[in-house]
Structure formats: C-alpha cells, structure tokens
Image (cartoon, rainbow, N blue to C red; front, side, top):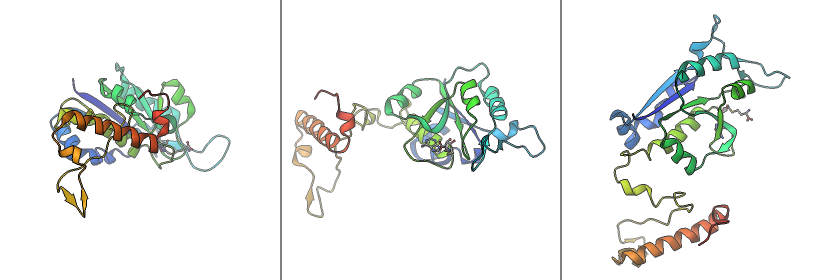
Length: 229
Ligand code: SAH
C-alpha cells in the first residue's frame, strides 16, 4: 500500500499545488503516494452551506464550526487509524524526525484551518494532533499542509532518484548540511575547496563533518546543545 494523504480543506483546488511538479509529481503519477482533498463545506447542512461562525466571547474573525468539521473527519476516517493532524501555529513545531515517522506510516489525515481557527471541542473530541510549521501565522492551513506533505513525500521509498541523497542532509544526523559545490572549478575567482576534488574519500568525509559542525554551531547552537562531537 502506498502512502495516502487525505486533506480536509475549504480550498481543495489548492492541491496538489506544487506537489504536481518535479519528483513529487512524478511519484504521484506513478501512484507511489496518493492525495485526496475533501471539501469541508460538503458536510454543511444548511442552505448556505455554512462552515464558520463568530467567536464565542466576541472578537474579530470567524471560527470553524465543530459539528461540520467532525462530520467531515468522521467521514474520511471511518475504519482508519492514520494519524489525524491539524495544521496550527499553536502546534508542536514540525521536525525532520516527526516527518520521518509519518512517512513510515500508511498515511495521514490533515485538517487545514482558516479564519481564526477551529473550535477547541473538535480538536479534543477527534484527538487532532496540532502541528506547526514555524513561529509565524499563515492565513490558512493549506500551504502548511503542502509543506508537510512535501517533506514527507520526498523521503518515501523510491521517490528521490538517488537513494543516498537523503542521508547526509540537514537534520538527518542532527546537524545542518555541509556546503555544496559543483562545476565550474573556478567561479568569479572562487575555487572549490581542494579536498573535494582530491579523490580522498576519508578526507572528504572528515571535511564535510567538520563543516557541518562549524555551520551548526554558528547558526543553530540549539541543535548542537547536548550533542557529543
Ligand atoms: N487565530 C489563530 C491563527 C489562525 S490562522 C492563532 O492565533 O493561533 C488560520 C489557519 O492557518 C490556522 O487554523 C492553521 O490551520 C493555519 N496556520 C497558520 N499559521 C500556521 C503555522 N505556523 N503552522 C501551521 N498552520 C498554520
């Protein structure tokens, strides 16, 4: 069974978005993963197909109604034990480790919020795991869901051309990646570091690890804290 993503959204036409392109797009065409966007509005019952209402207690904006969203969630998760995620700036920040875990499972159900967000009771009642893609506020969960899916799909088995190309990457070993170079040998007077063209694989590995440590210590001391060199 290939990885299956179901997205609950008010804007299903935003999917697959950029995931229709490049390696993710080819993998989608080949059926290495699948995507099912579901329109939350289809579960509204009134004539106007209302999905939101004003916040209890007052204040700006609108809140997604719990009853409609719960119906949509129940519809897609019947007999299904895929994790149910809610994209949310209040969620646990996404990490490569979490991405790896999700990618190793059979798939996900992702709820995209809009407006001021989602009624707390549906988050609790349907056990939604809130996931954030960073400390900033988007206008909707769709680009966050596409970002999460992008990170998942690229590490699914067989999606990346070169199976090894994921192993040295940023975060895979808790470090940022070493600098990369390619031809020409000299660019505007700047040379490729000599060790990389030396053919000495042990020396190259050592250089890459040192550079990764240097970069990570400078830019992301939080990643290095508690890690033995
Ligand atoms: N009022 C909310 C923000 C709502 S933003 C608050 O202050 O917490 C509208 C929707 O965009 C959210 O429901 C969520 O689905 C999505 N969203 C916004 N920022 C996000 C982020 N950093 N990560 C993931 N989803 C986000």
